[in-house]
Length: 447
Ligand code: SF4
Image 1: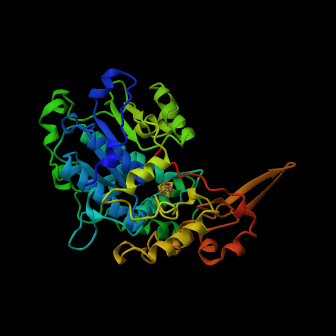
Image 2: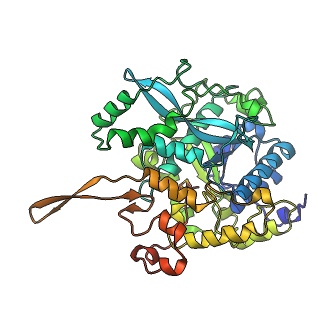
Image 3: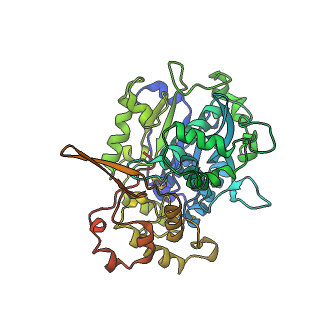
């Protein structure tokens, strides 16, 4: 392991209050270079402590590039084997439950190991878009830049549920779901609930969209934390973590909410994102913005790279000399969910080009795979199957009219969609009204 590049940079965690240093620290690891540099520096400079309850979390959306999964695996092994800090891969998952006397499905999470899901590895991570589709099928509509259900459910809420159990100091996650061997949620219950909530989808379409989530197991079994971390679960029984005396159940909201420090890999050259994130620390406990942003009441945000004045140049210099690194070239735009709509319509053709160029140089196991999220046709197919076509009411000059609109990843009646983006060449796309007008935005998922 080359440590010279680590010694050239120094992180000094800046705490708003001295007592924050003794709180558990949570590294929100996104799988990118910046977040990876933050993690390695924290580990190598001894800033993460197992006995404090510190933990590293990676939210698997099942839509990352194969090379990103490879990098996450390398980081998780480094954190656990070399530094003894637990690193958990977690995924959004649903289960069936009774609510107000009626069967329904609810969103929660499960722990997964760092190898892909297969018949011989049933607790492996999903990477063919299954987690993403489970959410879309459960919600019945696609995320968009106005309704980022993917960020809120696949990342933020999932992490919060995990932390509530981790901080409670239990050895296992809780079992969720009923004990019947078969699903209990029937077509008629589903349709009746949809009508009660004034849903307008016809029965066939509703059942078709719900089919994927209903094919998932009805219950989420109890899982041992120790089975998903090489570090084991001993953090609960020793040191500062045990002395703090967290209760059986760690409240994440309210007056007695569990306080913890959240470490996010935003850089100094992203000042607007940093300012937006840090502004949340000033939100009072009752501020509705906290709930809107899926912040738990005890979360204290910290951006160590930005505090140390580390920008993209330093991140690239840091990884240049290291023995292991992210296999995707820095000039490519393949981080996060590969074809994420937040990258913007103008960026999608470059993602297509990047995929082709990295496939030409990467070893076979790290290349894109057809009909998975590293293939734009997966996104086009998902969009076709889950876009909504509601009747929109228009008002004007005392008259009312209704028009059928399409709501997909790019919003209402967008001029561009993944079908076009997957089929048309760039020179054909630039003539589209909605194409050039949509500049690429940073995904901001870690925010
Ligand atoms: S990277 Fe994009 S598609 Fe993936 S969860 Fe974030 S906003 Fe959603």
